[in-house]
Figure (cartoon, rainbow, N blue to C red):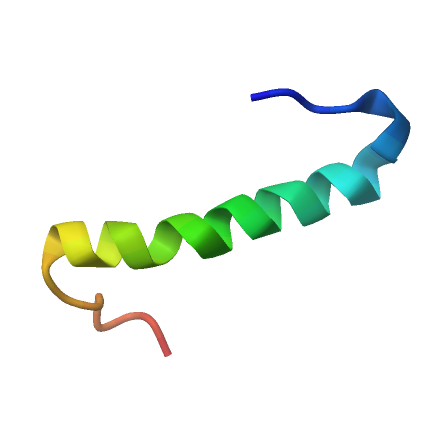
Length: 39
């Protein structure tokens, strides 16, 4: 994973948020169900 320093802290947070948002559905499918603690 490559973090571009010129994006700064905000850019890195946005990148991480995008990655997490894409990864979450796959993680949930792998577990077979949505965890109860997700709103």
